[in-house]
Length: 513
Image (spheres, rainbow, N blue to C red):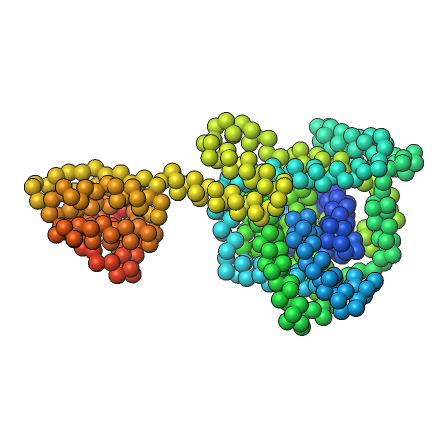
């Protein structure tokens, strides 16, 4: 929550000015994402306001920007098409059909929000730690490319004046911070180039051209409404699969954005708190007829680089967006889309992890493959699929690297032999575990020492049982030594018929990594 007493005057000024830049930058994004789903642009704008407002207050990372996003919007395309087809079979058309589709989108936001709240309450946000660093690099680079590619559609049908304004906007964003950081470069670009475009009558697309119906909602604020679909089991069954995917995509993007900002700021946010905040925001926006969303890495980076470090910046962005949409529609409509495109191009350049190229030379080939794979999948497929693929590839690589068990052997007289194992015993290393032993030629008593290894899963337990049974069949006894407490508990739960040394004079406490 806000604590104005801890704010310095510079923080307040920077947060407010940065928030205003982000407020303007949110407009074309929210409109574009509404178009992706096929609904009225006002839905995306209202959603960006509500989600941004709630997460600014309750979120796990001060200054992180959330709203309607492309990754979640893509998930909703299928729902919108399915809902449209169903409602058409019920005889709906025109405005009634559009309102009906929005009610299904709103239900998806409510259900996705509930799922996200459960993730936070159950403290599952910590599992973001399972995402390896190469996958995070890939995610950041992929999103940077996606942000840049998303701007290309605005050039369609435009002339040289569009390119001139984009270049001018990028120049201001690059050069002004070198001269002064008193005012965010993005705000200067928006104000100055809007004035130039207006008085020179530049033939370039404006926000009013992008969303001509926006003026119809001037003076209106989002209002509370319970979707009719909330009380229909058939509707819930239709929406739930999309809600689950939207919830997971939203959580992944939000938690990874939080991780990126943690690295930029050197401070640590709360993943579980962000899960709950995002869930509350999405549930609330659903009751106001909005669409689900999540954190926006592009706008979050704009905010951070413009000096917005506190909650006041993201709060200002949300409120500023609503003021622009509800009360300053005429002024908002004058802003050239080219200015915002230039800003987003610079955000893309700033977001891209350029140091990852130097990391490629130093990191293992497997990690480099993960980074490149996640980048490509993010660009051409889906964020959630990319991150999950990165985790799976990294896990398989880890398993392959550690899929070896080695043993040092010692003869203990003529009747006993000691196997000192090295390496983890789990599903991937079971075969190499079997290969270590010489059942046919070993003496009557076998001691397997686990001082330098560990039984990590049920496959490891089963492997120990099987090797013991193989020795038993030839009338040889196996004794286990130096098992850690949790390994002993695992064997006990598995009811494994194995002899363990409880008291070892040389090593009474098992190593527990």
